[in-house]
Length: 223
Image (cartoon, rainbow, N blue to C red; front, top):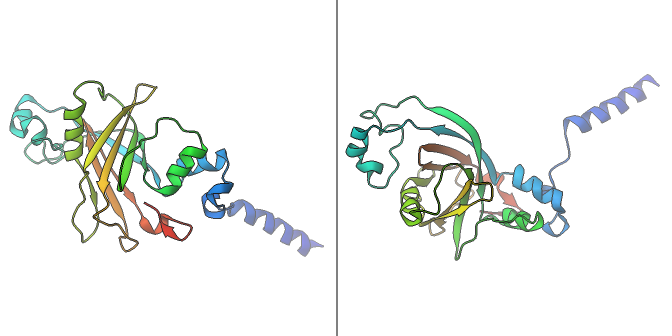
């Protein structure tokens, strides 16, 4: 009697300790419901919450020496004060999605999400959501050029991949979405242990890792 009760309690505890796999691991896309889709968009290997650092304001001299934005490139931490990093503050994490991944596109449709980035052609597309203080309506082309020059995908032992385009979208809540379009000519494979996405958006500096080994869906790397 005691032994049977012990086994029952242990089994129940095991269920609590090891919750069921998420829907994207156990169901084909056709069987996803809206909640499944929202789970993919909130907590899956294609979605990250990046810690963002706020860089200090540049002095007039630093702007002159750096050409305002260092020729379009973000100054970054080491570009300030003669190459010495300055103190920064952190803000709330910002969501980054690997938009071109099939599970993300499918989840956006299932969740009836409005305003997701769109693009033409073959590309890796990463979108940064809820970016504050971007004046998308004014100087859009110049801003997009500066953001493009201050972003990169990094892989160990391989050359960096720079975006071919950046698209800016105003959200209904007044925040903005920035979508970075990277060429697929620089193929990312399962042999790449991790991909580092770096970007600077005005004074916001962010870096986030993605892991290809975790980004397989139905037996195929989905990027």
